[in-house]
Image 1 (tube, rainbow, N blue to C red):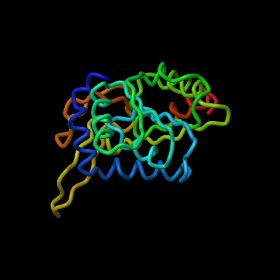
Image 2: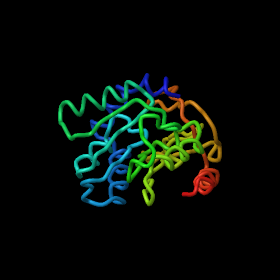
Image 3: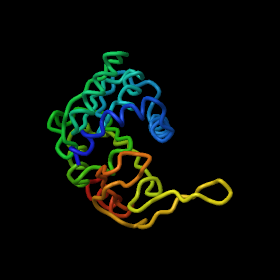
Image 4: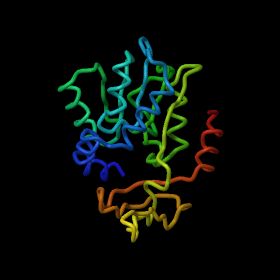
Length: 205
């Protein structure tokens, strides 16, 4: 999956920075779950991509490290930091391990639209639990399957509108996008809510 994201990293960065309603909404909604003043707080932004959420967290005063397994995503994040410095830092790392993060070292772990892409959710949650201080929190968002799901497509209506049809709403596992509006062939993992909830519960969240 890392190779897939590496391949489309430049396209993804351009899409996010040119204005993506989904990514802007997800960022702002997640920020609404956090204090306005994050001064003195240490945060790991898991699956940071090109840094849309990482930069916003740094702007609130946090000491924030954005991590992503795709090196080209991190290159784009650093490029944005060079243009408009926020104090955010970035590292290539596997969210299932978090090798660059010390145990009991962060107050928050954030994950904006990325937890659905991890190949091993249980391992990722275990790694998150390891790096959080006692009383620390994981705050995340995941896209609803109606937005990206196997065999999902838009069908034009006779009235000039369109409707979204999802062919396999309950499908789980790895699949490749056929969305002509996006990066065709991008590999994505999908999990339904019950298995995700059980993984959180088993880890103690």
